[in-house]
Every structure is written in structure tokens, then in C-alpha cells.
Length: 376
Image (tube, rainbow, N blue to C red; front, side):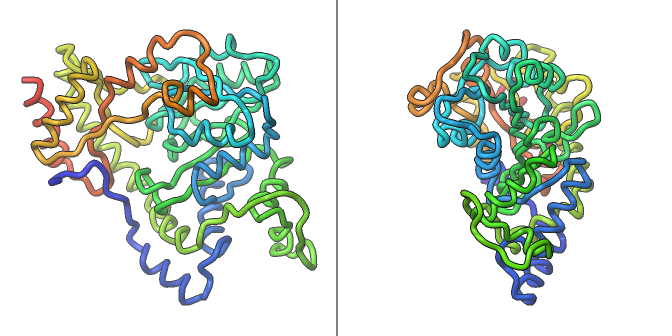
């Protein structure tokens, strides 16, 4: 493809920092660059504790363990999300309860959550699609009244805010992704954000294979040992070094992505005004991070033709999730509460355009012209 859908970002100092890991003979987990990444996220978001993980999937699994999700528990989430959102709870024996989405933001419809709550409900998992926040005031109010955990899937939400507060910091736990398709990448990687002090020590133990090694490294104990269940959720410090080089220039990268997003919007607004496509919506109070730019076609048939047209012009565009409630595993492990008014219909219309740090404004114009050509 002349213009790929995604090109993973790379910071200016990435190779220097990775070489430093090798030189210092510290390439395993929890090295100097892991600490720097954790500290950067804590300072940027205001979360009590950040723990870098091997993926956002593992961060969500950690959150499920910390929330003590048990077999038979129910967890409310949107069906329009990546499989990891549900998998983390299915692994604990819980039942994902899917509710409909809002057609404007593609986020969970906060007005449908309360009706899905039963005496088995343990948590609500809002997914901040495209880095645009869910309606967190309403969700947090529901959770408080029903004594439920809130575990934010903020995989796409690094640098996004809701009413001035970072995504991932509202609920007890927030989960970031640093996969190669995200705004900031370590190849495979993620982070768990912990709001309350009471969960920090247990999280460190679970993440460190069930040991109290974190306390040992801080000099709080003279030896470490196995104290609880756990696994290994530590990424290599070389991955963290690659990521930290991007976090150092996070503002620059964010500004560039926003300029690309805004150019798309400006270029394609006439098509939206003419009723030929729909464009992304960012509600008042939400500051997004330009994680993606998508359009919505008339229907799935038009989307298929559109993707073929763009591919014929050497531009790769892609659709996104197949709703989980219609997938084989979704039918097996979960259930949909209420009516699927928008989830399937809106997901069938959505197509993502290329957006990455190294993309140029000229390329955005070229892509936009090919979109216009299709609708001419």
C-alpha cells in the first residue's frame, strides 16, 4: 500500500535508550525505564499508582483479580469492544452482560446500564472508544448507588480527558494499551492505573508472581518470598525504554495527531453536511487524543465497496470490531440485555481511515480526495 492504515510510532531516543538497557545488563522487568514510564503516567494522570504491564489485556485481568471477580458474577460492558474487555472476566468465570451503545460516540449507553443490574452484578466496564470519554458522571453515580466496581477500558484513551480529568482515573482501576496500533507504543504492552491506596500492595504482589519482591527492592523487607497467588505481568525494560522515548515527546505527538484529525474533519465535513457520511462526535467536556478518525457509510454494503475503492487506490482502510454478543464466544459466555438498537447497525457502517504520527497533512488531503471521489 502507498498509504498504510497504521505505522507504529518511534521516539527520537528509542534506540539510544534500548542500547542503554543492554549496556546496563538490565533488560528484564521493572528496570529504570519501567520506573520512568510509571512515574510519567502517574504525574500526567494523577492516578495513585501506575504499573506497566505486558498488555492492556493483562492490565484488565489484573483489575479483575483485584476486584475479586468470582464465577457467576456479572459484569456490564458494551458489545462493541475488543475481545480482551470480556475475556478478562470470562477467565474468572464471570458473565459479560452487554448493553447497547450510543450512536454518536460508539460508547456504552449510560442510560441502559441501570436496567441491566442484578444482584449478581459486580462491575461496570466503560470503554472509551476512539479516545472519547464515556459519560462518566452518570456511570460513577450508578456504580456508587449500587456499590459496584468501575474498571475503565481506556486502551485508546492515553492523553484524553473528561471534564479535565484523565481517562482511566475515575474508576477503581483503569487500563491503558501501548500496542503498536496505539498513539504511544511498546509493541505489546499496557498499564494498570490504581485509584485507591488499598489496592496497591496486592496489585504489586499479583504482578510479581505472587511475591513481595517490590517491597524487597524498596528496602522494606530483607528478603522476598511467595505470599499470594499471582502471575508475571512485567514487560521487558527494553520495551519500556522504547515507550519512554515517545512519552518524552507525548505533547508533540498528540498535537500532530490532532492536526491530522482536524484536517480530515475539515476536508470531509461537506460530505457529512450533504448527508452522504457521518463523522465522529466529541461531546462537550471531552478532550480526545485523535486516536482514530472514522467515517460511517450508509450501510455495510456501501462500506465494503468503499474499502475496495480505497484499496484500489493503494490506501488501506479498515472496519473495526464485530460486536461481541454476536460472536461464537459471546453467545457462549455472555448475554445481551435489552435491545440491540445501535450496536450492530452502527458498527456495520464504521470504517477507519489511516491516522498515525508519521502521516502528513498532504497524505490526509490525498486520502480525503479519494473519499470524495467515491461519493462523487
